[in-house]
Amino acid sequence: MDEQRYLALDIGGTDIKYAIMTAVGEIQYKGHYPSPRHSIEHFWQAFEQHLLPLVSQYAISGIAISSPGSVDCDSGIIYGHSALRYLHGPNFRQHIQHHYQLACEIENDANCAALAELWQSNIKGDMCLLVIGTGVGGSIVINQQVHHGHHLHGGEFGYMFVGVDEEGKPITLSACAATRALIQQCAKVLKKPPEQLDGKTVFELAEGGDLAIQAIIDKWYQMLAYGIYNVQYCLDPEFIILGGAISARQDFIAQLETKLDVIFEGAPFSSVRPKLRVCKAGNDANLIGALYHYLQRQG
Image (cartoon, rainbow, N blue to C red; front, side, top):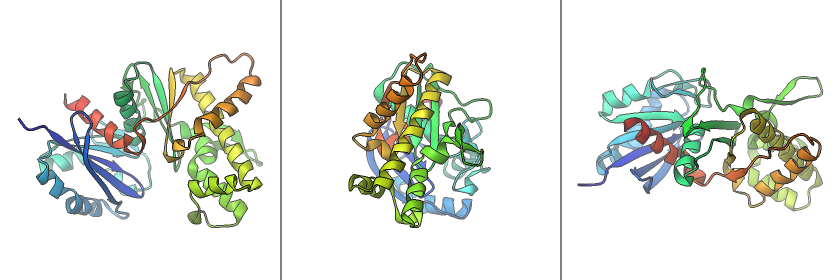
């Protein structure tokens, strides 16, 4: 009997990544194409152009989707907000089942990243995941299951308040500890449009001796460490997993540990230190986790 294969999609604000995968999570083929910007009709047109040929070629058994937003896994509808506004409202599962006669499951992207870690790292204890990117996304896993929350906002750590600005207005973790926030702060100092910078360029400037950029990065790590501390003491997970492209930096965990040292020196009654790990699955985490979610629900 031929091995079953699945199509996994990771819908992002810039690109849609896809992969042909086996039931054990092996990626046999993958690619990406630009995310349609304007309408759900354009989304399905691009899907049929890029992916329908693969569905036939590989005899796909089902489709697993990772998506931004507040995903109702039972209904197949995406609530909340994201860079692709047209995602919110349509029923993806019904569309795929009706038009392509394929089973479909859909889950939030940060939850997919957490599920990939659960699957590939074989973690048994409770954990939280923070994805550092355009914002700070997150996921909570308790007893091997994603905790979605009553309003599907479980793990939305980026909304946490971690300080106030000069006018006394609250600052969220996403506003000061996301990669986008780091780039925006550096762009302001450099008097450049943020579009001309990325995370790699920012760290290269710091390593080249730019003291102003070094100071911004230092504060950025500090604010992210505050968020991690808060997550530990709110949910008390065994592990806190960190994802996003910036987490691949070799000194990423070491920098955060240094900031946690400072926090614990100033909080002598705090004794539970977060155990930090970098997401093992890397850039494929959402695809892998989407498939794991599909397999769990489809039995």
